[in-house]
Image (cartoon, rainbow, N blue to C red; front, side, top):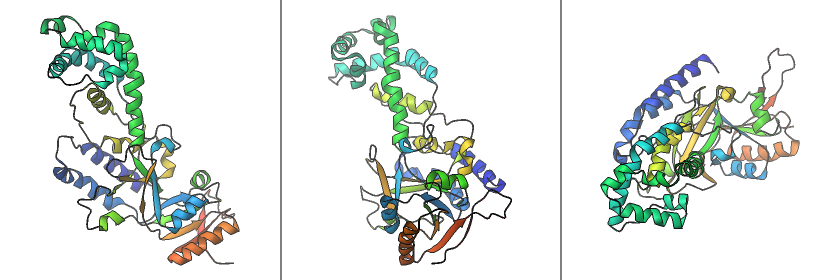
Length: 358
């Protein structure tokens, strides 16, 4: 990675970490908090970003229709992708020090008003034991609660084991499933990228100019009221040896499942978690386009329409696949390039030249 972009990514990281949007902040007041970050990202966005593709019917169809598919991290090749780290002991301590008494009093008062017992606790203990626990809490006095740890008193070790199985696993899964990401690179000359993402140089790459990105929803007159609108954000990856700390999210996630009305300290946590990767991936020089819309959690992908400006054919692409792609490119009026290896060069790098019809 060149020093210019490396420095820009460092500045971006600092801005990203300084940008915090508490859940209590109304939607209409969040845009000003994001503005410095968005403006800086726009100022450093390259005019050329590339997307490596294999030769398949799905990719041919997407190219023909200008479709960009954004999937979630469960399908990515980095097992750490979007996976947050968290301080498990801190969360355990928080439960013991706070929730064990204050929360039980609050829960008792809710039960006395006729509100339901939290489903999370039922799932931990089973209906029979949870029913007994519900009756115990419902009839407990303040003195009972102060002198006994009612939830943990039955089986503290079992309680924490079940939290491990139920809450932590679901929190981890949430961060990997809540982002819809389309990946781009600053370079089209990476030998490794052509090998990993373009079927060992038998595929193709598309060039995009996302500097002034406008997707279809941006141009729609009903964007302010449409429930199916797709919003987008483009960010560079931060290559860092230290993983993103999502302890506060897991703590909030646990609190909500225990019936507490906890609020997130930063609603952008899932985006931030998706922007930290090991320096071992730095050769990819990656940028990520995030797509989002209401009630999208659990969907396999989201998609939008973005027209490429050029196509690059892999060094070993077949004649028939190149012909198919070239016909589409000509119909769209795109520039066409052919990747090749310069046998006279002393450097290990791919080169490209203008494609000429044979």
